[in-house]
Length: 110
Image (tube, rainbow, N blue to C red; front, side, top):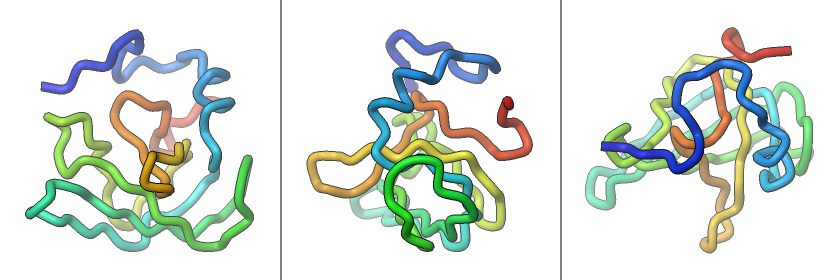
């Protein structure tokens, strides 16, 4: 089961300043494509960026996460809009998990 150290899951209004500072790519985007690699247990989500808040001004961004919530993978769904906090991993790719502040745009706080 997923355990997020120091961050209660599913609680609105959580202070996200620390996450903002540690996220190289913060944006609002539509999950255009969700691909799961069952061999390595990862998910790649291709977003069309609607608004860049911090970081790159690319129109398309890939975010990687674990393929299921048991290993803290964020349950991205194709066709949904998100407020995404992407953090670069050691592999140079952007990652997110259930432990981060990424949220469906409709549930995002002002």
